[in-house]
Image (tube, rainbow, N blue to C red; front, side, top):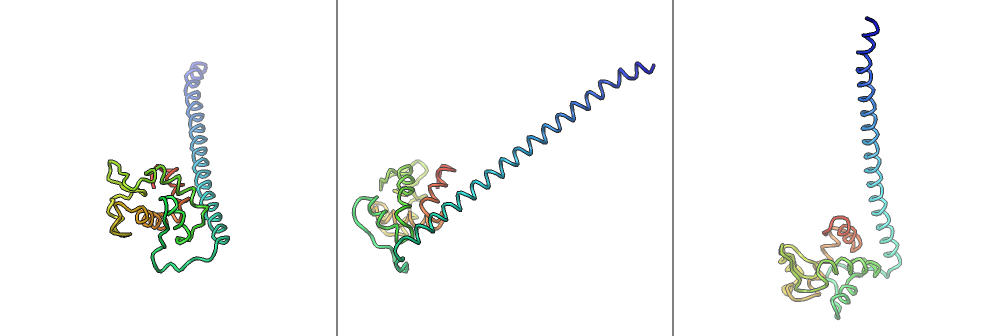
Amino acid sequence: MQTQALRTDIPQRHLQSVVLVAEQAAARQAAARRRAAERAVAAAAARRAAEQAAEQSQQSQSPPQQDQSGPPPTPSGSAQQIALGMLGSYGWSSGQFSCLVSLWNRESGWNVTASNGSGAYGIPQALPADKMASAGPDWQTDAATQIRWGLGYIKGLYGSPCGAWAHEEADGWY
Protein backbone atom coordinates (compact mmCIF):
# COMPACT_ATOMS: atom_id res chain seq x y z
CA MET A 1 0.00 0.00 0.00
CA GLN A 2 2.81 2.37 0.82
CA THR A 3 4.47 1.71 -2.54
CA GLN A 4 1.27 2.54 -4.37
CA ALA A 5 0.92 5.85 -2.45
CA LEU A 6 4.40 6.87 -3.55
CA ARG A 7 3.56 6.19 -7.17
CA THR A 8 0.48 8.43 -7.16
CA ASP A 9 2.44 11.12 -5.32
CA ILE A 10 5.15 11.32 -8.01
CA PRO A 11 2.98 12.93 -10.69
CA GLN A 12 1.75 15.56 -8.19
CA ARG A 13 5.31 16.48 -7.20
CA HIS A 14 6.31 16.55 -10.84
CA LEU A 15 3.38 18.87 -11.62
CA GLN A 16 4.38 21.17 -8.77
CA SER A 17 7.95 21.24 -10.06
CA VAL A 18 6.80 22.11 -13.58
CA VAL A 19 4.58 24.90 -12.26
CA LEU A 20 7.43 26.28 -10.15
CA VAL A 21 9.81 26.28 -13.13
CA ALA A 22 7.21 28.04 -15.30
CA GLU A 23 6.57 30.67 -12.62
CA GLN A 24 10.30 31.30 -12.28
CA ALA A 25 10.67 31.66 -16.05
CA ALA A 26 7.76 34.11 -16.18
CA ALA A 27 9.29 36.14 -13.34
CA ARG A 28 12.64 36.26 -15.17
CA GLN A 29 10.91 37.41 -18.37
CA ALA A 30 8.98 40.11 -16.51
CA ALA A 31 12.18 41.33 -14.85
CA ALA A 32 13.94 41.41 -18.22
CA ARG A 33 11.07 43.45 -19.71
CA ARG A 34 11.24 45.88 -16.76
CA ARG A 35 15.00 46.27 -17.20
CA ALA A 36 14.58 46.87 -20.95
CA ALA A 37 11.91 49.50 -20.30
CA GLU A 38 14.12 51.19 -17.70
CA ARG A 39 17.03 51.21 -20.17
CA ALA A 40 14.79 52.73 -22.86
CA VAL A 41 13.62 55.47 -20.48
CA ALA A 42 17.21 56.16 -19.40
CA ALA A 43 18.37 56.28 -23.03
CA ALA A 44 15.60 58.72 -23.95
CA ALA A 45 16.49 60.92 -20.98
CA ALA A 46 20.16 60.79 -21.96
CA ARG A 47 19.29 61.79 -25.55
CA ARG A 48 17.21 64.72 -24.30
CA ALA A 49 19.99 65.81 -21.94
CA ALA A 50 22.57 65.55 -24.72
CA GLU A 51 20.38 67.58 -27.08
CA GLN A 52 19.86 70.23 -24.41
CA ALA A 53 23.58 70.34 -23.60
CA ALA A 54 24.44 70.65 -27.30
CA GLU A 55 21.87 73.40 -27.72
CA GLN A 56 23.20 75.29 -24.70
CA SER A 57 26.74 74.90 -25.96
CA GLN A 58 25.75 76.17 -29.39
CA GLN A 59 23.87 79.09 -27.88
CA SER A 60 26.82 80.08 -25.71
CA GLN A 61 29.00 80.19 -28.83
CA SER A 62 26.53 82.21 -30.89
CA PRO A 63 26.33 86.02 -30.87
CA PRO A 64 23.93 87.73 -28.44
CA GLN A 65 20.27 87.27 -29.25
CA GLN A 66 18.26 89.96 -30.96
CA ASP A 67 15.27 91.56 -29.32
CA GLN A 68 12.48 89.01 -29.74
CA SER A 69 9.61 91.45 -29.25
CA GLY A 70 8.90 91.80 -32.97
CA PRO A 71 8.66 89.28 -35.78
CA PRO A 72 11.93 87.81 -36.97
CA PRO A 73 13.51 89.48 -39.96
CA THR A 74 12.73 87.90 -43.31
CA PRO A 75 15.82 86.94 -45.27
CA SER A 76 15.56 86.35 -49.01
CA GLY A 77 16.59 83.47 -51.23
CA SER A 78 15.48 79.87 -51.46
CA ALA A 79 13.23 78.44 -48.77
CA GLN A 80 16.24 76.79 -47.12
CA GLN A 81 18.23 80.06 -47.19
CA ILE A 82 15.28 81.86 -45.63
CA ALA A 83 15.02 79.24 -42.88
CA LEU A 84 18.75 79.33 -42.19
CA GLY A 85 18.56 83.12 -41.92
CA MET A 86 15.70 82.91 -39.40
CA LEU A 87 17.23 80.36 -37.00
CA GLY A 88 19.09 82.95 -34.91
CA SER A 89 15.94 84.96 -34.24
CA TYR A 90 14.48 81.89 -32.54
CA GLY A 91 17.58 81.46 -30.39
CA TRP A 92 19.09 78.61 -32.39
CA SER A 93 22.50 78.28 -33.95
CA SER A 94 23.10 77.10 -37.49
CA GLY A 95 23.84 73.68 -35.94
CA GLN A 96 20.06 73.12 -35.85
CA PHE A 97 19.74 73.60 -39.61
CA SER A 98 20.61 70.04 -40.60
CA CYS A 99 17.78 68.72 -38.41
CA LEU A 100 15.36 71.22 -39.96
CA VAL A 101 16.44 70.22 -43.47
CA SER A 102 15.91 66.53 -42.65
CA LEU A 103 12.52 67.25 -41.09
CA TRP A 104 11.10 69.38 -43.88
CA ASN A 105 12.68 67.27 -46.63
CA ARG A 106 10.60 64.39 -45.28
CA GLU A 107 7.46 66.43 -44.65
CA SER A 108 7.19 68.49 -47.84
CA GLY A 109 10.44 68.54 -49.76
CA TRP A 110 10.41 72.31 -48.96
CA ASN A 111 7.46 72.73 -51.36
CA VAL A 112 5.28 75.73 -50.46
CA THR A 113 2.16 74.09 -51.92
CA ALA A 114 2.77 70.53 -50.69
CA SER A 115 -0.34 68.88 -49.31
CA ASN A 116 -1.39 65.46 -48.18
CA GLY A 117 -4.66 63.59 -47.90
CA SER A 118 -5.23 64.63 -44.29
CA GLY A 119 -5.18 68.33 -45.17
CA ALA A 120 -1.65 69.20 -44.01
CA TYR A 121 -0.18 71.95 -46.15
CA GLY A 122 2.99 73.82 -46.99
CA ILE A 123 6.61 73.46 -46.03
CA PRO A 124 5.91 72.64 -42.37
CA GLN A 125 2.78 70.59 -43.22
CA ALA A 126 0.49 72.56 -40.90
CA LEU A 127 -2.73 70.79 -39.97
CA PRO A 128 -5.17 72.38 -40.38
CA ALA A 129 -3.42 74.41 -43.01
CA ASP A 130 -5.04 77.73 -42.13
CA LYS A 131 -3.23 77.76 -38.77
CA MET A 132 -0.42 79.40 -40.72
CA ALA A 133 -2.60 82.48 -41.27
CA SER A 134 -1.40 83.61 -37.83
CA ALA A 135 2.02 84.21 -39.44
CA GLY A 136 0.69 86.26 -42.36
CA PRO A 137 -2.09 86.58 -44.92
CA ASP A 138 0.11 85.13 -47.66
CA TRP A 139 0.52 81.80 -45.84
CA GLN A 140 -0.68 79.75 -48.82
CA THR A 141 2.06 80.91 -51.18
CA ASP A 142 4.91 82.56 -49.25
CA ALA A 143 7.80 80.41 -48.04
CA ALA A 144 8.93 82.97 -45.45
CA THR A 145 5.48 83.09 -43.86
CA GLN A 146 5.25 79.30 -43.71
CA ILE A 147 8.77 78.99 -42.34
CA ARG A 148 8.11 81.67 -39.68
CA TRP A 149 5.00 79.79 -38.59
CA GLY A 150 6.79 76.41 -38.70
CA LEU A 151 9.75 77.60 -36.64
CA GLY A 152 7.40 79.07 -34.03
CA TYR A 153 5.51 75.78 -33.90
CA ILE A 154 8.74 73.82 -33.47
CA LYS A 155 10.01 76.16 -30.74
CA GLY A 156 6.75 75.93 -28.82
CA LEU A 157 6.34 72.16 -28.98
CA TYR A 158 9.84 70.70 -29.31
CA GLY A 159 12.24 73.46 -28.28
CA SER A 160 14.39 73.15 -31.38
CA PRO A 161 14.50 71.67 -34.88
CA CYS A 162 16.63 68.80 -33.57
CA GLY A 163 13.99 68.13 -30.91
CA ALA A 164 11.30 68.04 -33.60
CA TRP A 165 13.45 65.80 -35.81
CA ALA A 166 14.04 63.41 -32.90
CA HIS A 167 10.27 63.18 -32.40
CA GLU A 168 9.73 62.66 -36.14
CA GLU A 169 12.29 59.86 -36.15
CA ALA A 170 10.83 58.20 -33.05
CA ASP A 171 7.12 58.59 -33.84
CA GLY A 172 6.87 59.24 -37.57
CA TRP A 173 5.33 62.71 -37.13
CA TYR A 174 6.03 66.00 -35.42
